[in-house]
Image (cartoon, rainbow, N blue to C red):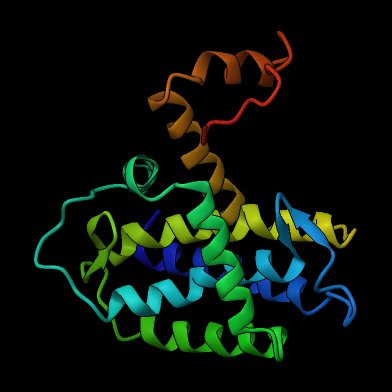
Length: 205
């Protein structure tokens, strides 16, 4: 996928998220959503796929140490995936957007679109796991948008149709994670109807 397509896929996934946030009922923000998160917490966590792009773009790194989107996740699992910390960051982000979540999401979507228009594909962003080209970092945020917008839609009982390009990018990363974390045989056999997945199966775990 070329650079322009990667940008468009990310922005389309962000629009998918914004559209679902807009449909959350005014009284629905405290409803259960995912694990210990309520709808507002989950929305706040997913919203970080906008704010992190802006933050990391503003703190460029000197060189690239993370080459591919899948490498970002593999490194993040080693150092950033403490469930309690992830949950707390989601709650904190939810509080940041509590006054008007839909407007905040739309506003930051516009800011990110404008910022991306200023950056070359090889602009190196400083992520918590190392320097990445912006064009390699964006698919990790598309992945987050797609998965957590589906979580959000489920929480508010909304039928949705995710954008095709975003789903394709998400499935690619999931397949790579399954391969590199030793889960590929179970995933392949289950996806082709050979057997069911084990209880609690996840390529993230």
